[in-house]
Amino acid sequence: MHGLTREENSFGANPGTKDLARHMFTRMWCGKIVVVTDRPRAVNGPLRRQWLKLARKVSRERSSTLQAGRLLPLSNMIARMTSMRLTSTWPDDYEADVFIVTIERLLHWPPDCRTLYVTCDMPLEQLHIITALMPRNGLVVMCKLSQANSETYKS
Amino acid sequence: MAIVSASTQLSERLTCAICSVSLTLDSATAGLYDANNQQTLACVSHFSEPEKLIIGWADFINREQKIFAVRMQERGGLTYRQGGANAWPNP
Image (tube, rainbow over all chains, first blue to last red; front, side):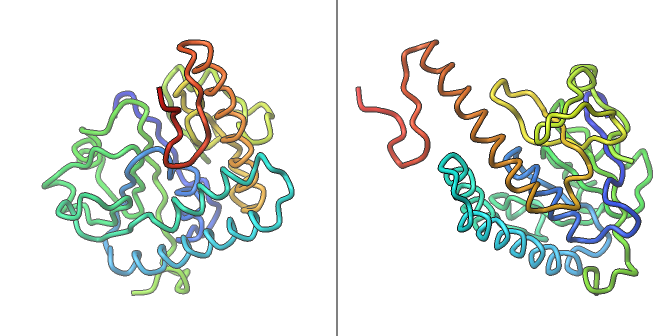
Protein backbone atom coordinates (compact mmCIF):
# COMPACT_ATOMS: atom_id res chain seq x y z
CA MET A 1 0.00 0.00 0.00
CA HIS A 2 2.85 2.32 -0.92
CA GLY A 3 1.81 5.96 -1.30
CA LEU A 4 -1.68 5.41 0.08
CA THR A 5 -3.14 7.13 3.10
CA ARG A 6 -4.65 4.75 5.56
CA GLU A 7 -7.33 5.59 8.10
CA GLU A 8 -8.75 3.47 10.82
CA ASN A 9 -12.17 3.82 12.31
CA SER A 10 -12.71 7.52 12.88
CA PHE A 11 -16.37 7.11 13.71
CA GLY A 12 -16.41 6.10 17.37
CA ALA A 13 -17.60 2.97 19.11
CA ASN A 14 -20.40 1.62 16.88
CA PRO A 15 -19.91 2.84 13.35
CA GLY A 16 -22.85 2.46 10.99
CA THR A 17 -23.81 3.49 7.50
CA LYS A 18 -24.62 6.99 8.79
CA ASP A 19 -20.96 7.51 9.68
CA LEU A 20 -19.91 5.97 6.40
CA ALA A 21 -22.19 8.37 4.49
CA ARG A 22 -20.69 11.35 6.29
CA HIS A 23 -17.18 10.24 5.44
CA MET A 24 -18.22 9.60 1.83
CA PHE A 25 -19.53 13.17 1.79
CA THR A 26 -15.99 14.46 2.33
CA ARG A 27 -14.67 12.22 -0.46
CA MET A 28 -17.44 12.51 -3.07
CA TRP A 29 -15.48 14.93 -5.27
CA CYS A 30 -12.33 12.79 -5.25
CA GLY A 31 -13.35 10.06 -7.69
CA LYS A 32 -14.84 6.62 -7.48
CA ILE A 33 -15.56 5.05 -4.11
CA VAL A 34 -15.52 1.34 -3.29
CA VAL A 35 -17.02 -0.16 -0.14
CA VAL A 36 -15.83 -3.68 0.63
CA THR A 37 -18.33 -5.69 2.61
CA ASP A 38 -19.33 -9.31 3.03
CA ARG A 39 -23.03 -8.41 2.54
CA PRO A 40 -23.30 -5.88 -0.31
CA ARG A 41 -27.06 -5.93 -0.68
CA ALA A 42 -27.57 -5.52 3.06
CA VAL A 43 -25.35 -2.43 3.10
CA ASN A 44 -26.52 -0.88 -0.18
CA GLY A 45 -30.05 0.03 0.99
CA PRO A 46 -29.17 1.59 4.37
CA LEU A 47 -26.20 3.43 2.89
CA ARG A 48 -28.36 4.88 0.12
CA ARG A 49 -30.95 5.93 2.70
CA GLN A 50 -28.35 7.66 4.87
CA TRP A 51 -26.84 9.28 1.79
CA LEU A 52 -30.19 10.78 0.75
CA LYS A 53 -30.82 11.92 4.34
CA LEU A 54 -27.53 13.76 4.23
CA ALA A 55 -28.47 15.24 0.84
CA ARG A 56 -31.66 16.59 2.42
CA LYS A 57 -29.57 18.13 5.22
CA VAL A 58 -27.44 19.87 2.59
CA SER A 59 -30.64 21.02 0.92
CA ARG A 60 -31.89 22.47 4.22
CA GLU A 61 -28.57 24.25 4.76
CA ARG A 62 -28.84 25.71 1.29
CA SER A 63 -32.34 27.00 1.85
CA SER A 64 -31.39 28.58 5.17
CA THR A 65 -28.09 30.17 4.19
CA LEU A 66 -27.92 33.92 3.64
CA GLN A 67 -24.32 33.96 2.37
CA ALA A 68 -24.09 34.26 -1.38
CA GLY A 69 -20.70 32.54 -1.49
CA ARG A 70 -22.12 29.36 -0.01
CA LEU A 71 -25.07 29.01 -2.36
CA LEU A 72 -23.21 27.70 -5.39
CA PRO A 73 -21.08 25.10 -3.55
CA LEU A 74 -24.16 23.89 -1.68
CA SER A 75 -26.18 23.68 -4.92
CA ASN A 76 -23.36 21.74 -6.55
CA MET A 77 -23.21 19.42 -3.55
CA ILE A 78 -26.94 18.68 -3.81
CA ALA A 79 -26.65 18.03 -7.53
CA ARG A 80 -23.69 15.73 -7.02
CA MET A 81 -25.25 13.86 -4.11
CA THR A 82 -28.56 13.24 -5.80
CA SER A 83 -26.94 12.12 -9.04
CA MET A 84 -24.39 9.74 -7.50
CA ARG A 85 -25.17 6.12 -8.21
CA LEU A 86 -24.59 3.33 -5.70
CA THR A 87 -24.36 -0.19 -7.06
CA SER A 88 -23.56 -3.71 -5.94
CA THR A 89 -22.58 -4.78 -9.45
CA TRP A 90 -18.85 -5.00 -10.02
CA PRO A 91 -17.24 -4.34 -12.49
CA ASP A 92 -20.01 -4.38 -15.11
CA ASP A 93 -21.73 -1.20 -13.95
CA TYR A 94 -18.64 0.93 -14.46
CA GLU A 95 -20.47 4.25 -14.71
CA ALA A 96 -21.60 4.12 -11.09
CA ASP A 97 -19.90 6.30 -8.47
CA VAL A 98 -20.03 4.07 -5.40
CA PHE A 99 -19.49 0.32 -5.59
CA ILE A 100 -20.50 -1.92 -2.70
CA VAL A 101 -18.86 -5.28 -3.32
CA THR A 102 -17.39 -8.37 -1.71
CA ILE A 103 -13.71 -9.20 -1.38
CA GLU A 104 -14.04 -12.08 -3.83
CA ARG A 105 -15.35 -9.82 -6.59
CA LEU A 106 -12.56 -7.30 -6.04
CA LEU A 107 -9.89 -10.00 -6.09
CA HIS A 108 -11.02 -10.87 -9.62
CA TRP A 109 -10.88 -7.24 -10.72
CA PRO A 110 -9.03 -4.77 -8.44
CA PRO A 111 -10.53 -1.26 -8.36
CA ASP A 112 -8.78 1.90 -9.56
CA CYS A 113 -10.71 4.05 -7.11
CA ARG A 114 -9.50 6.96 -4.98
CA THR A 115 -11.29 5.86 -1.82
CA LEU A 116 -11.71 2.35 -0.46
CA TYR A 117 -13.75 1.53 2.64
CA VAL A 118 -13.10 -1.86 4.19
CA THR A 119 -16.06 -2.73 6.42
CA CYS A 120 -15.33 -6.38 7.05
CA ASP A 121 -12.36 -8.49 8.11
CA MET A 122 -9.77 -8.70 5.38
CA PRO A 123 -6.37 -10.43 5.41
CA LEU A 124 -3.50 -8.04 4.76
CA GLU A 125 -2.33 -9.88 1.63
CA GLN A 126 -5.79 -9.52 0.07
CA LEU A 127 -5.80 -5.83 0.96
CA HIS A 128 -2.47 -5.43 -0.86
CA ILE A 129 -3.90 -7.10 -3.99
CA ILE A 130 -7.07 -5.01 -3.91
CA THR A 131 -5.23 -1.72 -3.45
CA ALA A 132 -2.66 -2.51 -6.15
CA LEU A 133 -4.30 -0.34 -8.80
CA MET A 134 -5.19 2.57 -6.54
CA PRO A 135 -3.42 5.83 -7.46
CA ARG A 136 -0.90 7.55 -5.19
CA ASN A 137 -2.50 9.46 -2.31
CA GLY A 138 -5.59 7.25 -2.51
CA LEU A 139 -7.37 6.66 0.77
CA VAL A 140 -8.03 3.32 2.47
CA VAL A 141 -10.43 3.50 5.41
CA MET A 142 -10.68 0.49 7.71
CA CYS A 143 -14.05 0.75 9.44
CA LYS A 144 -15.77 -2.40 10.52
CA LEU A 145 -19.49 -1.67 10.52
CA SER A 146 -21.33 -2.56 13.68
CA GLN A 147 -23.72 -5.42 13.01
CA ALA A 148 -25.40 -4.71 16.34
CA ASN A 149 -26.60 -1.48 14.82
CA SER A 150 -29.56 -3.27 13.23
CA GLU A 151 -31.26 -0.08 12.02
CA THR A 152 -28.39 0.64 9.71
CA TYR A 153 -27.05 -2.83 8.98
CA LYS A 154 -29.95 -5.21 8.51
CA SER A 155 -29.86 -8.19 6.20
CA MET B 1 -8.19 6.72 15.86
CA ALA B 2 -8.03 8.26 12.44
CA ILE B 3 -5.14 8.44 9.99
CA VAL B 4 -2.59 5.76 10.80
CA SER B 5 -0.27 6.14 7.86
CA ALA B 6 0.16 8.95 5.39
CA SER B 7 2.61 10.26 2.85
CA THR B 8 5.26 12.69 4.09
CA GLN B 9 3.63 15.48 2.06
CA LEU B 10 0.38 14.98 3.93
CA SER B 11 2.14 14.80 7.28
CA GLU B 12 3.50 18.30 6.71
CA ARG B 13 0.08 19.91 6.30
CA LEU B 14 -1.53 19.17 9.62
CA THR B 15 -4.21 21.85 9.67
CA CYS B 16 -7.96 21.37 9.54
CA ALA B 17 -9.37 22.68 6.24
CA ILE B 18 -12.67 23.51 7.95
CA CYS B 19 -11.71 25.21 11.22
CA SER B 20 -7.98 25.86 10.62
CA VAL B 21 -6.82 24.38 13.92
CA SER B 22 -3.58 22.41 14.13
CA LEU B 23 -4.05 18.66 13.99
CA THR B 24 -2.25 15.49 14.82
CA LEU B 25 -2.61 12.54 12.46
CA ASP B 26 -4.63 10.57 14.99
CA SER B 27 -7.28 13.30 15.12
CA ALA B 28 -7.38 13.95 11.37
CA THR B 29 -9.33 12.57 8.47
CA ALA B 30 -8.70 12.97 4.75
CA GLY B 31 -10.84 15.62 3.12
CA LEU B 32 -11.14 17.27 -0.27
CA TYR B 33 -8.37 18.34 -2.62
CA ASP B 34 -7.43 22.02 -2.60
CA ALA B 35 -6.74 24.40 -5.51
CA ASN B 36 -3.19 23.00 -5.76
CA ASN B 37 -4.63 19.49 -6.12
CA GLN B 38 -3.23 18.60 -2.71
CA GLN B 39 -5.02 16.42 -0.21
CA THR B 40 -6.36 18.37 2.78
CA LEU B 41 -7.19 17.18 6.25
CA ALA B 42 -10.06 17.85 8.62
CA CYS B 43 -10.81 17.18 12.28
CA VAL B 44 -12.46 13.84 12.99
CA SER B 45 -14.81 15.64 15.40
CA HIS B 46 -16.63 17.31 12.50
CA PHE B 47 -18.27 13.99 11.64
CA SER B 48 -20.44 14.33 14.72
CA GLU B 49 -21.78 17.72 13.56
CA PRO B 50 -23.12 17.27 10.00
CA GLU B 51 -24.29 20.89 9.71
CA LYS B 52 -20.82 22.19 10.50
CA LEU B 53 -19.32 19.60 8.15
CA ILE B 54 -21.58 20.70 5.27
CA ILE B 55 -21.05 24.44 5.82
CA GLY B 56 -17.33 23.92 6.42
CA TRP B 57 -16.78 22.14 3.12
CA ALA B 58 -19.01 24.62 1.27
CA ASP B 59 -16.86 27.51 2.55
CA PHE B 60 -13.71 25.58 1.72
CA ILE B 61 -14.86 24.93 -1.87
CA ASN B 62 -15.83 28.59 -2.26
CA ARG B 63 -12.42 29.71 -0.98
CA GLU B 64 -10.45 27.30 -3.16
CA GLN B 65 -12.49 28.14 -6.28
CA LYS B 66 -11.60 31.81 -5.79
CA ILE B 67 -7.90 30.91 -5.51
CA PHE B 68 -8.20 28.76 -8.63
CA ALA B 69 -9.97 31.55 -10.54
CA VAL B 70 -7.28 34.11 -9.63
CA ARG B 71 -4.55 31.68 -10.67
CA MET B 72 -6.23 30.99 -14.01
CA GLN B 73 -6.48 34.72 -14.62
CA GLU B 74 -2.81 35.24 -13.81
CA ARG B 75 -1.52 32.34 -15.88
CA GLY B 76 -3.38 32.64 -19.12
CA GLY B 77 -5.79 35.50 -18.85
CA LEU B 78 -8.63 32.99 -18.81
CA THR B 79 -11.76 34.04 -17.00
CA TYR B 80 -13.07 31.26 -14.82
CA ARG B 81 -16.79 31.60 -14.24
CA GLN B 82 -18.36 29.44 -11.62
CA GLY B 83 -21.01 27.03 -12.84
CA GLY B 84 -23.24 27.08 -15.89
CA ALA B 85 -23.11 25.14 -19.10
CA ASN B 86 -20.87 27.74 -20.75
CA ALA B 87 -18.45 28.51 -17.97
CA TRP B 88 -15.68 29.41 -20.40
CA PRO B 89 -16.07 32.63 -22.42
CA ASN B 90 -16.35 32.47 -26.18
CA PRO B 91 -13.14 33.55 -27.99
